[in-house]
Image (cartoon, rainbow, N blue to C red; front, top):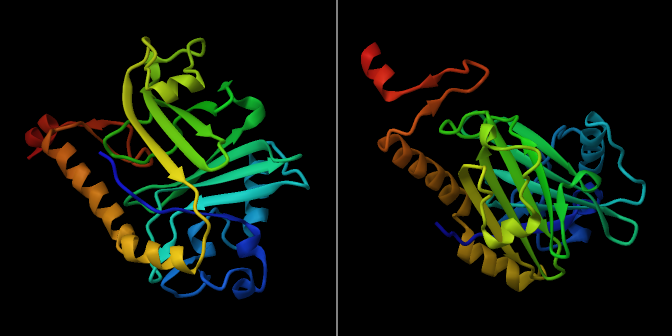
Length: 267
């Protein structure tokens, strides 16, 4: 399935600065508006500035934030004061725009929890002129139709006028540390022979300058985007339920797989 969407990309100083209206008069910041962004929708702890919250997250993972770091956020905006944002991305660069780290800040439905995956450029398992790739185990429950025993593989492009983000999810027991996919594998959609692909998704984004014209064009085209995202999530969940795909409860409650046969026997 392919869907058209609209993300905002901005430097964190846009929210961390005190005079928000002077920073960008076309965007409602931390207040109601036709199109806006709000600190509460972004990385935790929300009581901190975004820069301090990113620093806090890096520190929790044993890393530091360079003093000269630039942090850019890629996120879904609020439309008429409302948003639903499954994932936001934070790009951290330093030393002449050299990539330092990527953060993937994920929320789950319907539990309303949030988790941030930290991808350090120094720990990238693959890279080339177009992509940098990261591999890690799944540690955060997102979909009730996927178990926790999975491996995530991310690839982030760093082209100047566009950006592509890909994620492949494999069954963990089919993966080995010796056969991680290269960044080029994400670009060509090749799947390593020893792995069983469970899910893949891609964001293909073209950069546009933010102005009065693009603001109203975005509102006209995507005003109902948050509602559409929720409807699509539950619609696809319904289709999986109809197909009798195994259901996995939140690991906080149980690690047991609930099958439809067990449900029928219990009733």
